[in-house]
Image (cartoon, rainbow, N blue to C red):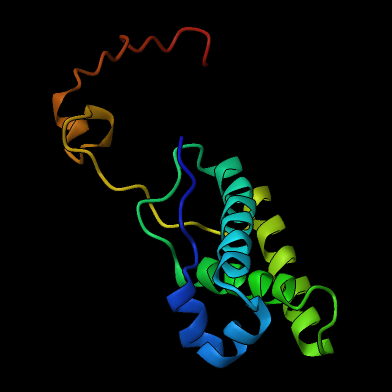
Amino acid sequence: MSTTTYITREQLEALFGAAEITKLGTDGAGVDATLTTVNSEVDSYVRVQRPDGLAEVPQALEMAAANICRFYLHKGNCPPNIENRWKAAVAYLRDVAAGKVALPAIADDPDTPEDEADLNSRVSWVVPEWNPKGWM
């Protein structure tokens, strides 16, 4: 089972600026290692509700991963707004794991009958004969 990628370096740079990410990472390996850690961490929360992972990453999970990554890159020396975003992201992920946050629907697989919309048309219903005895 591979870890889903919730945030990439390119996404971090687009959100917070390449200069900030480069300055915080000081070297590419530092940023890459942090991204690996954060993606794995976010995945651990998501897989509580979706053991098979997600087909696509919702924007809210992307932002949570980005805020956690930014906090980790500051190595504990960050402004209060970044720490608050980290706290909010972790609280959001706890809600994801607890099932309080709706994740995107799993893609329909037409080869599995339980996912097909016309399931009822292929089921033969057995209705027992109604007997009023005992009801009156």
